[in-house]
Length: 172
Length: 185
Image 1 (cartoon, chains in turn blue, cyan):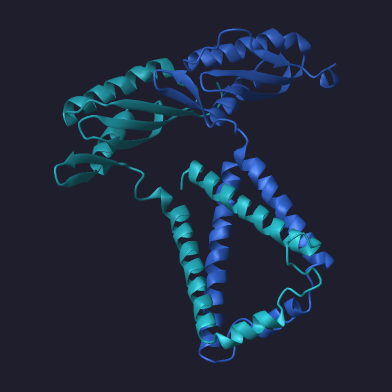
Image 2 (cartoon, rainbow over the protein chains, first blue to last red):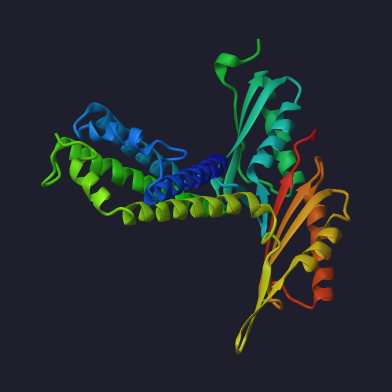
């Protein structure tokens, strides 16, 4: 979402810049009584003089704007996954990098074909959740590998680490 | 721009979209008092007003266009120029007639060099803010794959003690973000 916000802001900036320049040039030409240079204002405004408020394209555009606005509101106001995790004494671990590191640790266990680690929780209250495809007997070893990796990073987690082996994708 | 600034910007854009869409929809459905859904978007009255107000109306539109273009340019510079100026932080010392602002570039570079002296730290970035004698320290260190952060914390603490002794200051707040490489554990 953070990257999407950044890209959307860049797009908005370009639209404002280009649109603003075009509007200024067109309006300046109109004020000076000269023909439009870049945009055919009269040709662009003519359909607006024929379109009624209750025409379906107007309603569709309005509904689209409301839905887009509501979607944006929900996306911006909901609680985002944290960018970093608290490990005490002013130290934090970058969440995504840690997920990748734990994924590598889990995938290095013999019998594991594929692993994926996601961190759940916020602030100091976080815990990894490991999804593994492979030999069901490797569950304890995966948990041990993840716990060991967290210990190496000075971020030990009390309590059990959730290791999930989807039954439909277990190795034979 | 910070993540919070982006969120505020897009929340405002979302509210504007909802408000604009809502008003147009209400007008289209005839819910607005005095509104005529069978009227056209750009009526002859509006066109006549525009022609009567020429050249002031086009000049106002040109000013609005320039304002939009300036906003777009400002936003673009803030987005693209974020990696340069301002990342190092600024120390501020309040005085009797205003404040002394001190760019912290030289101080932070020294600490960064000290931190990257350890082969486990691939890259370090330091931001100093606040009072020069009681600064807030924001560190971001990239750690190579397989490194133990237990020993690394000690290295960072030693580097900080050296920095504190040299710069004659006492950090008020320390915030470290470690980015660990995945690699092979």
